[in-house]
Length: 136
Image (cartoon, rainbow, N blue to C red):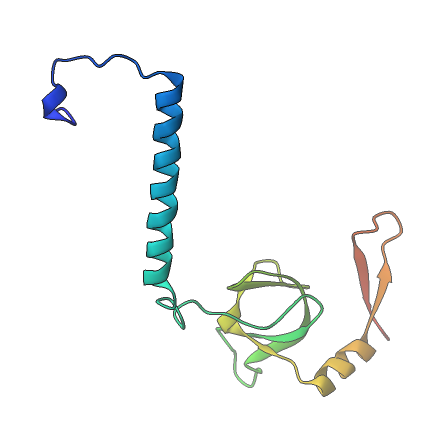
């Protein structure tokens, strides 16, 4: 079906450049007003529904084990956080990204113990990489 039945079978003359510019400016104004109204309606609507965290790169976290064996700790780590998104973390030593609900921050004492256990040095050829070595 035609979008506008009034013009069915009729052809309109092509708009001039000035008419096209005016129409685009009017459309732009309507667009900005509509988005402003939508933003006001939806402000705070997603509060609490999207998980968030205050963990950043360089922090130490414990990662939850989902299938623990007998007498095995439920949390493994602590691990250093390399990258973050609002819902996931990339930690050193674990391949896939970890959801923020499956980690907990390591206490400062645990971080100090981990820092004593591990040694970080610059990679010899790539300045964007670190080499982590467990201290003996």
